[in-house]
Image 1 (cartoon, one colour):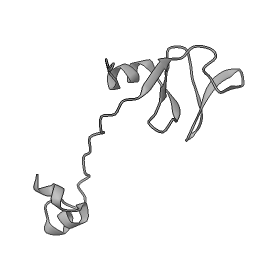
Image 2: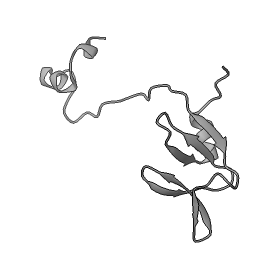
Image 3: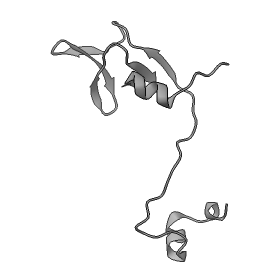
Image 4: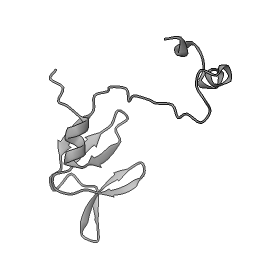
Length: 92
């Protein structure tokens, strides 16, 4: 694809894409580890609610959520419906 040769700024200068038009991106496929939450996986409790410590701060986790470990070892909770829509098993 010819756009791959140019920076976004260069493409906008050439008129290939407009400044108002947002770029579209596809997330790179990568493999993460995940387990469905069960008591004992939390990092602590706040007002009696379990939480997972993430880069963005402490996030509440509930039964049914998945605890995902990212490529740099970071952990974050993901609601079951979002997890099932976004991830698929890797059989290696």
